[in-house]
Length: 254
Ligand SMILES: NC(=O)c1ccc[n+]([C@@H]2O[C@H](COP(=O)([O-])OP(=O)(O)OC[C@H]3O[C@@H](n4cnc5c(N)ncnc54)[C@H](O)[C@@H]3O)[C@@H](O)[C@H]2O)c1
Image 1 (tube, helix red, strand yellow):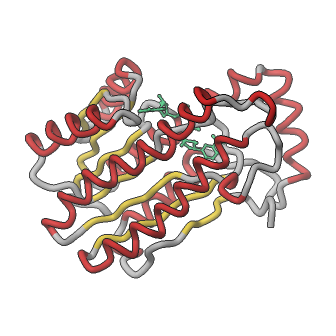
Image 2: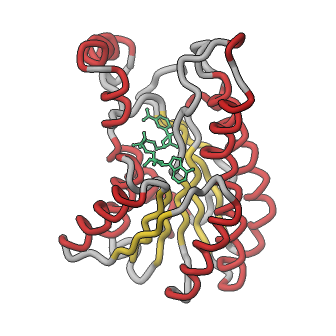
């Protein structure tokens, strides 16, 4: 049990990567707190873990909204004396398929709120608990797009994920003295239902065929690949790793 007696908050836990991470943590002994804007799906995921005999609780919040994050952390503090791990997984491209001429204020805000502000607000609140206990592991979710979008249609998403990378490094410098590590994961394409449904079966299957030759390892990522890395970064085995971004890309874009 690599996370025995730890309490871990996983945001975006109604989604496939967030859920895989929460489940991985719980199977390693953690009590997991699942947070998501999608209250119903989050409660469903939580019930799924509980039915497996795992310790889990769910919280509904729009994490891009400061007041909702503050309220959620007040509820967490009320019920849990410690918070050892924060995995900031909430996000996604909320201004997809948008060329430069069509980028809008509203679209930029959606991407910054869901991907960057949610991360910053949750880190700020979690850090208060972690600094007091002089222990913490923070894992943030970037994307390979942090380098800049390879397609011109995901520019505000790329900008938000680049912000997550810069924030991760800044926070690592600030929190190191409290025995808190802060790292980020930057996946390339990961197979999740939301993407598959968004693209439709035919486009998705064509893309998968293409990826067999484009990805050096011959496949795209799975939520479990992300969960495995998040587990390592959240564990004591990674106690001397901080301020790093790890690309989880099957070798694409080397
Ligand atoms: N799937 C990929 O190919 C891929 C690649 C790189 C990075 N990522 C990142 O991985 C993370 C998880 O995405 P996923 O692929 O599992 O997609 P997903 O859509 O299944 O999960 C994202 C979850 O985040 C939640 N969320 C979004 N905005 C929120 C907000 N403001 N407050 C609270 N919850 C919010 C959604 O409700 C959803 O449950 C995202 O940050 C995404 O940018 C995904």
